Image 1: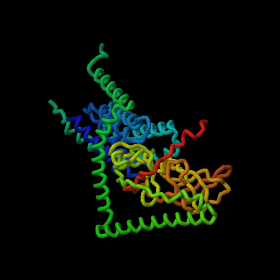
Image 2: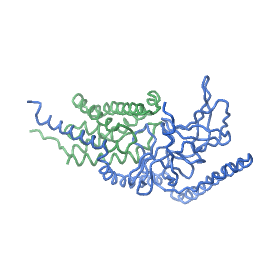
Image 3: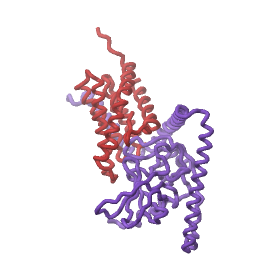
Image 4: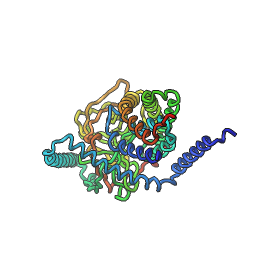
Length: 166
Length: 279
């Protein structure tokens, strides 16, 4: 059940991202719903399949995207790693963890994109990227982080009902 | 032997599966599976895109203006076509006046074949300026075909599968288009940028570039057909100690609001890279 829900949610968020949310721009930045859902899903306490479906959808998005060297896959796997590391440290305040993962994850993903693009010969600079893309994207992701986290939490709570204390 | 507990074995198996999938994907063995996987995604994307655009139009536009909008779009299209014709006619007249008519004899006005396509998505990374269209190899779309709207140049097909294609916009930071300025009669390069703005580069310092000058494709390089409208010069920048000047260009196409495009199907792009000497 968990696999089906995760795969379906990621499919919906991928389509929404490609169709609607990529058109929402702040300067040159845009939100990334897939990243946000992966971050929110990975932070859920009982979820065990985050790596698997992040790998699968990272691969699919890498094929769709024009980004070279499977950069989206690397970016999304990095977000799961950050989530899992933070989950053990700030698990008592999941909202705070979500904001931290969104912030760090977006920076990590964008850094991967910049490095990959520079390696492949694109004439982009760190400073211009930071001003025009990274900071606006972080801001937009932080705005959308809360509703996506709410959706992921709701889904997780339905799949993994709270354990009744004896 | 604690290392070979169930959790670690699961992790190793998972890593091996992901590595295997990555290897197969990079080797191209998964391409048919990707095509099979992507087709429903494309259908879903197309369905959702149409609904989203309809909903957006419904919310942003009063319903009684829809007909007027259609008429306005038609008239705008006709005006653009007439402007293009006017530019071509003026061009021909100028060439006739300097007795280049014979040389221009072979440059007949090309009659392009078009494949109409709907924009079903945009690139997921904000660093790149790409769009996705709902026509692919099954509809005759091929790699390298130029993409236009009724206003002017949009880009070229960068990747194509059976039911969809990815188009690299001329505003992408890696995009370079050979263009010419109509009144200045110079050939320069048009480049995209990270922010989606486009600008002219490599303009000689002694050339005078007038604001509002029309930018057309030159056809050099073999990637785009000549005389496609690109935009107008917005401003020029000259830096001290620079060898060339640059100019900002206002594109004729609004890249953020493209809903439909035309793929020129009877233009054969030429790969001139073997002719470029290696450094």
